[in-house]
Amino acid sequence: MASIAKTIVATGASSGLGFEVIKHLLAQPQPYKFILGVRDVPTTQAAYNRVQYDKSQHTLTLLPLELSDLRTVKTFAGQVLKKLGEGEGGGNAPSEGIDYLMLNAARSHAAEGLGPNGSKWCETYVVNHLSQHYLVHLLRDKLAASASRLVFVSSGAVNMVKDPSTLSTILLANSGAAPMTVYPASKLAALYGAHWWRRELTGKCTVVAVSPGLIPDTGLSRGMPDAMSKNNLPPEVMKDAKSVSEGECISRSMNTNSVTSSFGSPNRVFLVHSPSTTLPISTAQMKRRSPVHSP
Ligand SMILES: NC(=O)c1ccc[n+]([C@@H]2O[C@H](COP(=O)([O-])OP(=O)(O)OC[C@H]3O[C@@H](n4cnc5c(N)ncnc54)[C@H](OP(=O)(O)O)[C@@H]3O)[C@@H](O)[C@H]2O)c1
Image (cartoon, rainbow, N blue to C red; front, side):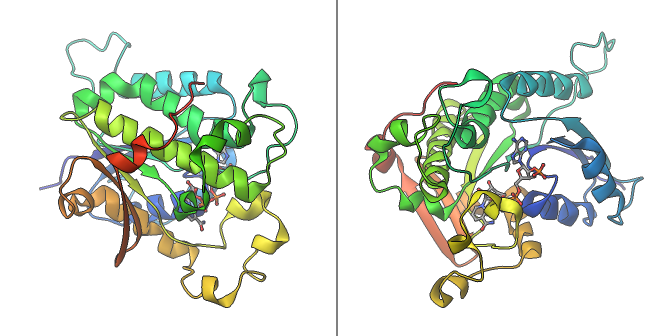
């Protein structure tokens, strides 16, 4: 008997690791209903058209989402809810739930020039944290009603932030901070967000943060200097590097409960670098760090 399809809503699944995760899940016997927010719908559709998968089993919907513009986040959230049968006068049919929300989109550019749409914050921060934090707010009731699993794709780069009190300065528009200062700061803010949502949705949703480890061949390096390209990274860093296809490791945090159940404490957000390495960050450590900004 065919299983019931699980619904996955995701950002950042048009290319890079997010694309690998969806491709991996499309090859599974479990049926999925994917609703993906992407910047370029035709190009992403063409990329998925090249993937072989059973179209009678999975459904794939691409909706426009430009995370540097909070208005499109609101439109996207509305379209997701409509797609799931809410607000359409859908008779007595119950609306569908969201099984997984994967927040994966990111960029890694310097904080130079004006903030997007008049924001006081730099674009990397708006994309990597504020917009996706806002998306969770907009979907909150549906996520809670669905007992969803929220997967924040994080990064070991958060450890590069030595003084969290500097985030408010680094992440300002035109702060002049370099990519490898802005990116870790924005990912740390997003990790605070994950931790906040875990507390906020306790007893309703499962919230995890996952780091895939170093995967140099994705588009993430677009905003970074040449020194960060794989040809220039030192061998001791490159020895742990993975291929893009190994980025599907993120999907493990969606398919199993092992990430949280193996550590037990509800006060922890977990970063999984690889199957063998974990970096738990506790509530106590979080409290020593500065709060998350509002959009
Ligand atoms: N690669 C690594 O070594 C590494 C290590 C640790 C953590 N991570 C994390 O893994 C995640 C995926 O990164 P990746 O390496 O796969 O990078 P990537 O190849 O650059 O993919 C980033 C994804 O985010 C989307 N995106 C970027 N800006 C956007 C915007 N303004 N609006 C909507 N979507 C936007 C991209 O869309 P387009 O296709 O339109 O560009 C793409 O789908 C990120 O959260 C990153 O922090 C990566």
